[in-house]
Image (cartoon, rainbow over the protein chains, first blue to last red):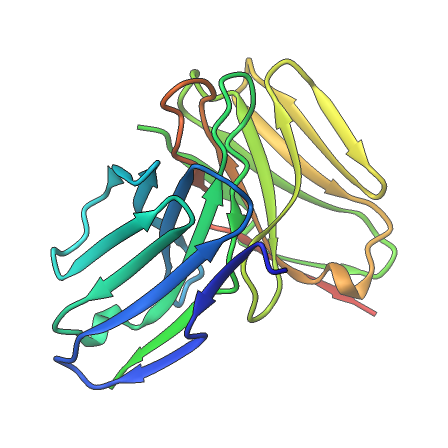
Length: 115
Length: 114
């Protein structure tokens, strides 16, 4: 009954490989996000999808490609992995309300290590 | 765009003492201010939030204050316990249609010494 789940939790791979991280939320939210957290713990937004439509696309190398097959899923595919891609990647979801705040719920994270 | 500054970056307190973390923001359109707690190896968890029509909000040992005029907000933890040790993040966001993006501070690592 996990609200926001990510797989895998750990991912170790060689430079140049292509990998994917999957995210699913069962909260019925309409918006999902990908964040990157570096070794200094800084949380940086990468992408956001609202109802399967890309709404936030920060300055991220085009080796990173998000895909949202439906409102409950947002996957992240990374091509030609580089050493600098090593980080923890968090998925989050929210239900944006006109009168309310953007309460985002985070997944447990995927620690990516590129060797 | 919005810019959120958070201080201090590290904070050590004795168990039972209070801890205060402060944040400032730049965009006057921001009116939603959540605080997240991130324990080691876990994702950030929302612990309390405040909206611009409220100056203070409390939840047991945790309180948040907001000064919209000065564009700053603070997290107060009283009677700290070892399990409060974590990294805390403040964030800011506008509300309403199209308000999707939270801007986070750089985090405060809180250590509660038994």
